[in-house]
Image (cartoon, rainbow, N blue to C red; front, side, top):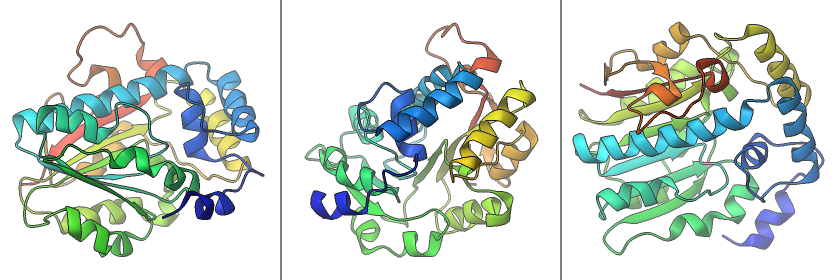
Length: 268
């Protein structure tokens, strides 16, 4: 893995969702084309910055809950995005230093910065694999994954703000089902997903912006997001808006600003 290899593959001619998300979070790892597209989204949906921040906060809380209350020591985080501290492994290892995390993404810019994701505790382990959620078999058969994760022991599958980039034509529910099928009892799914439920007109504009930029999206209702958890035991408070899932305090955000369904389920 070399930065020069990754740099050659980076397409700066059109915006990329991971780099736009970096912009929403106030990062610096994006290009002008990403900033312009992100600002177009923000002009239609000014709360996109709140949504991104609350999505990140949900990931932190879900990771801590799974580590502290459910004995999870392994994570598979798909659609990792550009590293933003604290990253998932830093949250997990702050609770259980022996935590092991496999990150997966298919954006060359994420690969370029992947060394940030390799700074594990001595007791734990992290790795990064370049993989696409649309090819779960290739992801699960990666030698790097097998080196870090023991699939005979519970694993938390972390899908944060990812599945709305998988349209129904790409079989999103089948993908999640296949990923969960190889994980043993006691494993978990932690998922967040943007929704048009609170402001359909605005989210149609966001859909059009992403799709016209070359990134098809499909934002889903609470009922459709709940389908991802079929067969799992949902943790309280069930499928809820991001800032309402086990909050640390009052974020001051409204449901419409966040527009993000979140949930954590345990595989029986």
